[in-house]
Length: 52
Image (tube, rainbow, N blue to C red):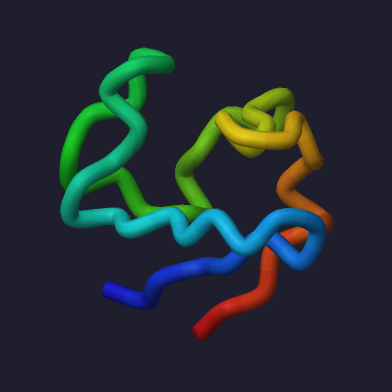
């Protein structure tokens, strides 16, 4: 699965890890994240992420 990087702060969303602190299970593809999901570090929206 592709990783996605926040253009604002550099946080990398790794689907293999998910975002467990915010209720996103490991194995969740970026495309399957809720539309209101935000970067856990800087609160940027999904539109601010680019595929790596």
